[in-house]
Image 1 (cartoon, rainbow, N blue to C red):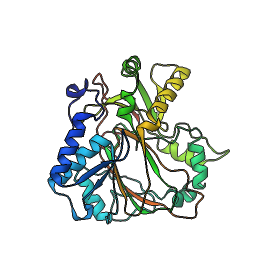
Image 2 (cartoon, rainbow, N blue to C red):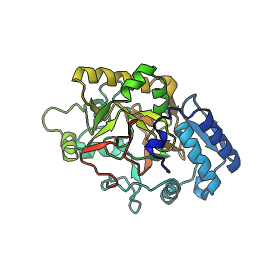
Image 3 (cartoon, one colour):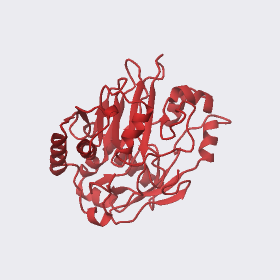
Image 4 (cartoon, rainbow, N blue to C red):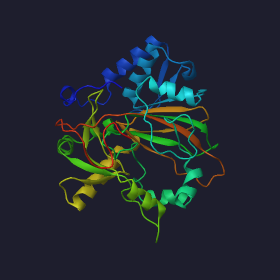
Length: 340
């Protein structure tokens, strides 16, 4: 996805407002597709396009504009297979190839990760999915995250496809981080513009007594980066509140109590209902979100149900985030820009 320089965009604090809305409307009309917003600040359904048949240049431009405007877009009743999923993703960037994937991920398609959490975690870490969630999500805000946010170059976008979903439960929720930033008071925006925070894999996980295979996994795969607390979006120029409940460890230069209080305030701001959208999955549904401008909450209400939930994910390579002052993120351990 095309980037703009930080110097060109650092003073732009819009949140996908009138100009971006007009662009998305014009490009959709030119491509003959329909973009239907589903919430006030985030989320839109796109109709009139068959992803398996391929997209022409006008349709690609329209989808890109809708993603930038609405942060996450949804397609219903699609017939994508693995090859089609990867081909669609390549229209918008370079897919990430993960060095390690679960056993449920398809052979021959290294760009695709199958997120059948419930099926894999019991064997990998010796616990059922609901216990793993409880240990990761012991506060109301802990589950909110962007994908691979502890890396120095988190993915730019994620495209998630539903294969099998339960008849109820299993919804995913997204929050618009640009709208959340714009909704802060001016003094608080000026303050957080100057801050940086460490994002670290596994922060806050509550271990099992004795040996815990997941803790050993975290120690073996330590990943941490100091990111700006407000990043400048490389395509829209928006200022984005770069916080989440899962990776953020500590605001640099603040005491632990100060950091904890401010982070809780900011994550609560980011996940206020008016900045979120919740999506009801069906087989054949596809969600395409801007991982730079959103955080999302994977469902925690289906582990007890006797129904599988099988999803396939492709992520697009991203940039090193840049703060309002033009300073990029700095890796601490475990990641290098462009290398997975």
